[in-house]
Length: 374
Image (cartoon, rainbow, N blue to C red):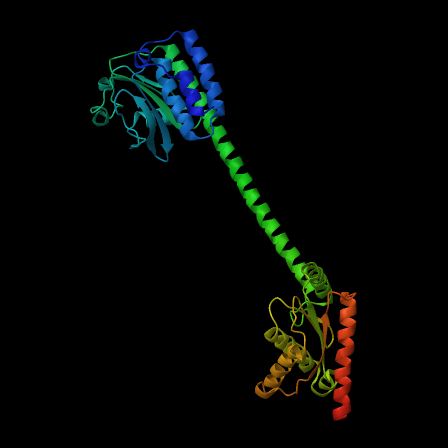
């Protein structure tokens, strides 16, 4: 049930009954119900809606205000009255009867406002108020006040003032509970945000660990583990779709001589340049990896173009690189190309082995024709 509706059903009466004083027993029963409803309030607005009506009900007043202490000012935060009072306005604590109540930590009863020097007459003249009772919200270091007003000269009874003070004391507890509840909610939100951030950081770390476990640090290509993991999945997919695929095995020629002549730093540069050429030559959907050392593989899923054109395209890019980059070394590679036909008994290991054999055939042919040692 909505809190305000619950409060209204518990404490609201028609306009005639508001002006009728209720018995002390009825007032106590009403106060008990108000305590119950206030215990469920979770916002200051809910508390004020309950209290402003209850104050009138308990005292038979023509109006009630809910005043909050705001530094050295009284803020008239809410009201329930037969005519407008001061809702939304602020007055200095030193000239306001609400301020007097809070500064002196005691109730104030004024049966004739025009006969009391504590009343700022200019503020009251536009209103219907002739008599009032004001009690502090919390006796020790008050945080606000509850005021009740009458349109005719009226002397509230001692019991009514006690009931009003009891309402104010209950209001203080409700306000403190709201503050605690709000702080707990904020702590939960902060902790939730912290946990979400920690989870996000953990996920980033896990992703980075996974990336590093699948990626070659020098080139940024997949490593052997990453290549086998992804390619096995693509082979199964190609088999289900009845699509041919292709694998290239690439080896850098003469890397040991480059290392011996120019140093391992340049040798690493050769490996990185080769990786970049492979990325430039083949599709994003192709799986490119460095198996280790000077060996690379490219898996081309769903590719029927597995003739010499796929290696020729790479060789053209190598030639362009050697002509335009101005490196201290000449880049040379050997390539073995193997197509996977789905009617064959295939496996990834078998494909790599066969492509590796084809690569070495090309490398041996180069050695025979140039009499070079790689």
